[in-house]
Length: 265
Ligand code: KIV
Image 1 (cartoon, rainbow, N blue to C red):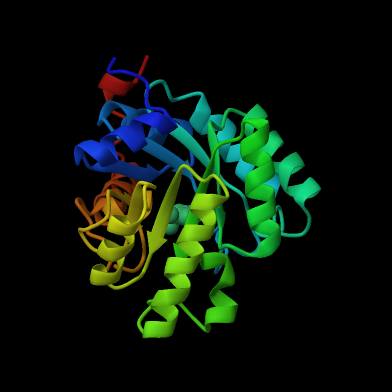
Image 2: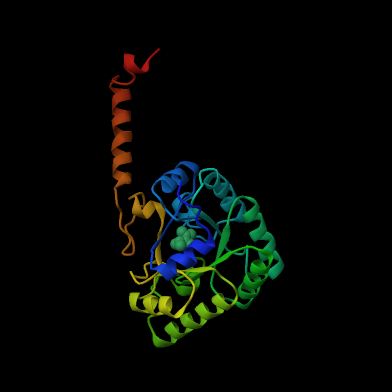
């Protein structure tokens, strides 16, 4: 096995110009496949809400739901850095609650937690968590838990003021002790400027090629999502392949072609 990925690896790779590869995973077999493929960072994202639990957004996802999926992923991981998302309202209400909830994720196997935005409580909680030994990944730009505030899934940072606000938020999370930052749905030239302006490794999704790494949602790159998004590339069409396999199974059972002697005792 290659050397275990840690928060320090990401910082070293940024300096060396070695790209960081991250993906979300929500279950044990997927975690093992991601490990075997050499993925550096596995995120148990709150996108589990949209991808696995049938929610429209990530807002309804609970801490217990993330914990459930985290434990399954953790049992499949050796080398990758395992990051868990803090779901909506598990942080940002009070520093105490945030630390307590992050602690539960760490005790379930997470090696770092990710939270969205840079609100005053979030920044204060980041500082306290880092002091306590909980590594924090920040998440700026389009932050899916604020989808209703943004009025939909929209690219952020298009105006000069919005770009300045993102630069300020980036400085704030860096000063609060984050070890890396996800930049989601922002113009590529802005993401590149942010990447050059910070010591933090930037991991982009819909933020162009200038970030220090990329993260993608499992279902999007494997063609399992119902939609295809501009920011992702399906490397295989599993939805179609699984559909065809299941239809063949249905037909073969109905036509008495399965099981044959080969599958019988
Ligand atoms: O939950 C998630 O999948 C994420 C990625 C989009 C970075 O936060």
